[in-house]
Image (cartoon, rainbow, N blue to C red):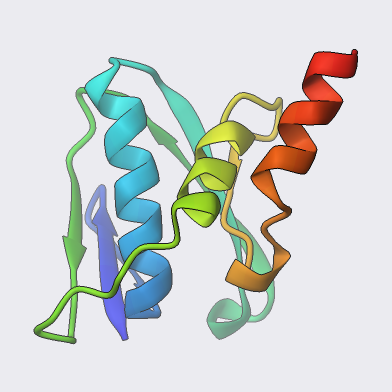
Length: 110
């Protein structure tokens, strides 16, 4: 179980999930984009957690596993795309990430 640290708070998130969130958050912050990051926290009595992230935010990612997981590019891209919504980046399970080509086809059709 990894830990995301933000504003003197610590949030436990599975290492594989946290590695994908780190990649998506890093992509946004490298472009100097600010956004919300949200997830449901079953550990904290099923409440929703939302953080405001900006290039000036101090955020830390701590991992328990010594070897980083292989990243699922589609999942990272889905997380990154979700950050453009009004709700912001929503941490979703890996198996919930829809097929990228399907989404791009829908976007081109609209």
